[in-house]
Length: 333
Image 1 (tube, helix red, strand yellow):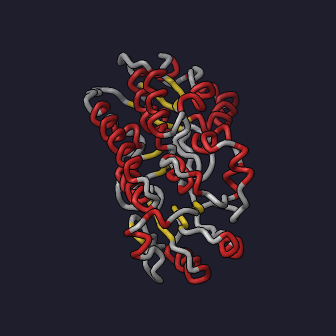
Image 2 (cartoon, one colour):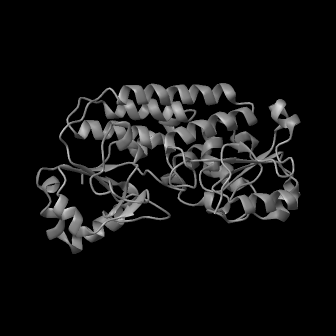
Image 3 (spheres, rainbow, N blue to C red):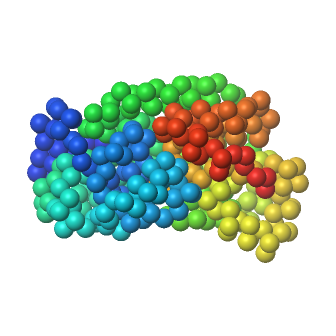
């Protein structure tokens, strides 16, 4: 299936030259598909929202951007569809609301074409890169998406500031040299929660630190479900677990304590939780926070609380004040 990413979709002048040249024409928007609303929120453009997907009303406290938007705002907006990957919005509601622009993520070319043909509303398709239909690395795709959306919403200054922050973070993180460590990431969310055997080949926090996931290095796809036997045989020095899979992981621990307690990482106290990486697409801010948590758990001197506060404030207006109290400190495994 083909997807359109990082382009101004033009089948029927969806994003007209007039709007592209004068982004102040865009006053009313809706966001559809996994991750679209997150990017709108990061750019501090939620005041433009005139409708919302039903799925955005779920797990508000678990989602950074939904927490930032707030329950009152989210529930005050009319529903424009169920939401989810490759699901069409309610076209009649879109015609009724008449947004100036539809911001879309992980919606197929065929569906984007249908939406435009039926509504005539300009549509901007954005990418989260690897794992979500794109070909670029996840972080680079997200940067490009932020810059493109910033131009469309007259938020270019805000978008550039965030991308500059991301670049600075990456440069600082890449200055650390991690040697002779066998490190695994498990519990990675992908279209739902999973247990310890759910991992990823191109896990961004690992890639920022130059860490290779030993149990996914030969995988043909990005997301991988490994065998428990493979984890035991590899016996990593350090294991990091995504909090999104905590319930499943804890339940499995009770059933299979022998498996967990036999691992070197468990015996050495080197199993640690990380903030949720995927929740209706990639939690971008958590990619950077998790990188610092990993460094701290590997023995480097890192003030996790300070890093978390700085990163949340960079990605969201007043982010730290709204998010820190429910996310720091992380409990021990």
